[in-house]
Amino acid sequence: MNQLARAIMERAGASAPVLTLPTANLLAAWDARAGVTNVSGECSAWADQSGNGFHATQGTAISRPTITTADGYASLLFDGTNDSLNIASLTAGSGTKTFYAVIKPVAPASYDAIFQSASPMIFVGMFGSNFIAFDSANRDSGLAHGSARCRIAYEIQSGAFTAWKNGTASTPTTWSGSNLAIGGAVSISNGGNPLGAHLLFLAIYTAARNTAVESYITQEWGV
Image (cartoon, rainbow, N blue to C red; front, side, top):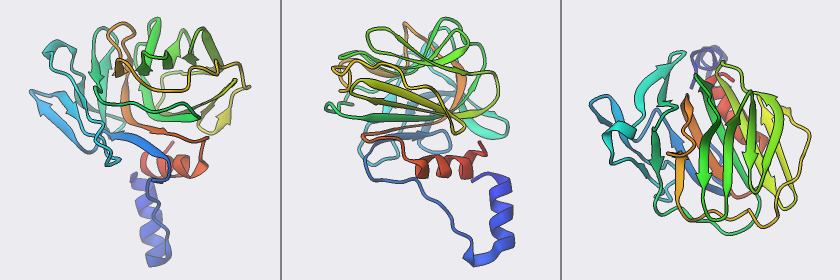
């Protein structure tokens, strides 16, 4: 929980609600404050906090993100060159998916994957100046990523993709109806599309965007 939220709740006393991460339709969740295996200041494994066991690992030392902080919050810093974490067992059937992330971009280059599934192709991340998704083509949200810490949500449904940055929605655009399952090679960042950013939190839900998830994110990370 961020310091401002804690202070408000302390002033309000026991009546103040404390939000928890919604678990309905939660497929996987990674939080830089928990479940990070530290090897010489780098992350070799990031434990899934959903209870589903979709842990992310990296056996190659040069490809491990750095364990650090962003604006005082625990984060993993992906270097934009070769850092990534692999999730060998993560699969999910066809249907609506929403990806939520707390991210602070550092040096986005070309395609920067926050999450990527190879079969079928699902890519959510950044390209150029904007947050985008990719199935069979670029699906540009029109939302600029900037360099400040922010929350981003990517919702994909059969035929439609919509993103929200700090609660502001993009104009819905096309999404391939066949690209809704998760499978094949699955990773946070990607060797071919490496992320250049601090990643503080990432969660995947098998449902449409839920504002309760974003309220929890705001409580915890102040965005």
